Image (cartoon, rainbow, N blue to C red; front, side):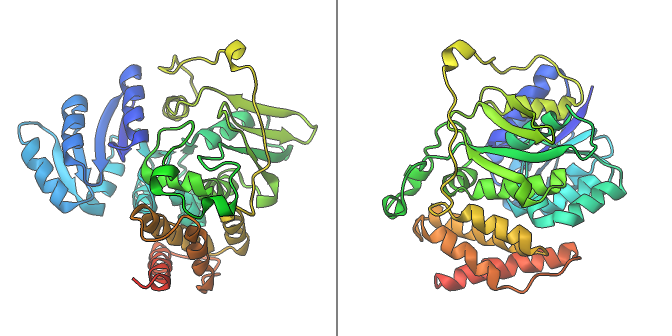
Length: 382
């Protein structure tokens, strides 16, 4: 029986992970969340973890009262979340926290030799070499959970690592605004941005998908996970979200991974790796599928893609700065304080920070994060 900690248990990935864990007969050792103590109570009674942590101290206090009749120990704050990630009994830590808040728990799991199933893009985007070096020093695997990176990971297993990889083909759904011009995006609302055509995700990630910043994050993450350059990653819009990504090898062969748009498939592969078992997901009915379509992304309208590519090429902590600026801009849009098109304008303020250093610590990462957020707030006069 594998023992698994789920960070971000009340979110979309966390809840689907619990479905997978129950189907496979695994054990949830720890659950963490941000503020939703009511939903966490339900999960504690369902999963009976040894530990649970709330990032919010107020929510943790409320949860202690709610589950006082259980044996689950309640922790609080970032330290509590990190403690759950680093439990000695964990076989795997699934990090499904949204945003930069996932970086410290990622490092905690890796530093304690715990296999990391990674759904938190920001860990590698912002943490970069620090995360990769920590994994290497502790001989720990990082198993991708994002559908695209899981697909690439699975495709690469089809070839020995002998330098035969030519390029990665990273697919994007195009989000709710596919095909629209900048003029058509001037007055779109948060409600419009949350109408994703294929996936059910949290608000922050869905807005990132609408701006295609999410795909920019995945570009950076792919470069770190698979040791490729941005020029080796082609991004293609695939509206049906059936082909999750592909790789092309030196001989011209292209191997792709396909599946219905159900996150339980990549979640399960990360948790059962290298084995495969029956999934709670449906199978593809190719006769009903009829066709799959592919388009080049419109990087002029959705310029967050080029921003992320530029940040990675500049190196240092520019990806950290760009990511932090996006988190603030995304939040401001969700709170209806800026327009959709202002998101990319605000993200570009991160390039005014001098952060080209090649080596860095966690403290340096967090300093750049705070500076980038503040520059966004200064730009909008907050």
